[in-house]
Image: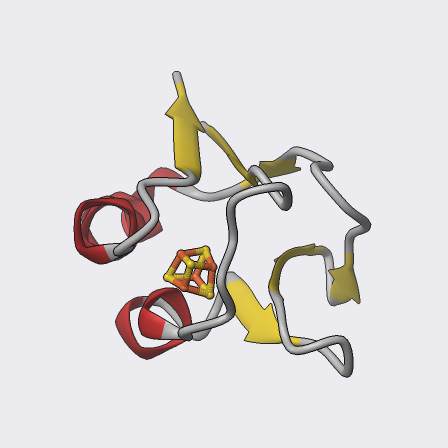
Length: 73
Ligand code: SF4
């Protein structure tokens, strides 16, 4: 499964990091970014994640106040 953040919409509130710290992290610019293989990806980049994280990634997307987290099968 894959996930990405629309950085034109992200407001840096950090709910996603609370829901799934394995995949999301806050960066120095105050916005959240997705991680893959121990690396933080860039703006709007897509990360593949293990299906075992699916529930917490879904929680992040549902709780994001900007609705700017997109999950792809
Ligand atoms: S919860 Fe949404 S708006 Fe808040 S930091 Fe994460 S992606 Fe950005």
